[in-house]
Length: 217
Image 1 (spheres, one colour):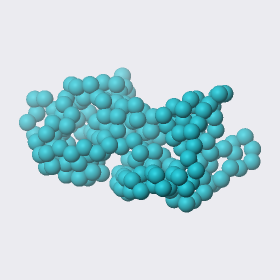
Image 2 (cartoon, one colour):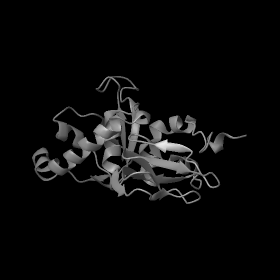
Image 3 (spheres, one colour):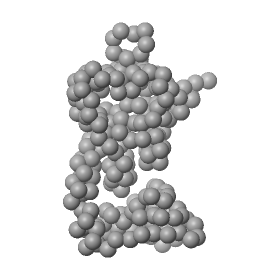
């Protein structure tokens, strides 16, 4: 657990460090105060999935040994993470992420439930969160159009355009049935979904927003 300083996370596609300047592999994340690392190997009884290096002098860490970690944290953390990891594996946009990247997203997600007919996000509001639909159905509406412009089902996501573009919500999303969503706040979205941001920017939303407004000339 990081108390002070910044740490960089590297993953080599071969699964281990290699000789040479590029031996660390690709930088996949930066961990700042309040973050943590090292739990995957303890949870899955497997080799380390990444290499973590301090990025500055004077870093401070708090550590738990394997036995203490498993006794205190394993049960609830493991069950929650496995539940979300299984769900994230079914989300097409996240299929390119590594297991390590998905596990970090799983840790940051929070579950919310909404009854049918609830406005989850409202057109024109400031975007504060990204949503993954775990169960149920929802619909997107735009002002002045009576019919829904998009349907959402399990595995779909919404709310990303306002975060990508730092712009107001482009449409309202209303639950059609009782729904359960996994939410990721703006900070977590920007920090953890960097590897798929370019894919999201290329995705078209017919009737909601046909093209990323940042690309309009």
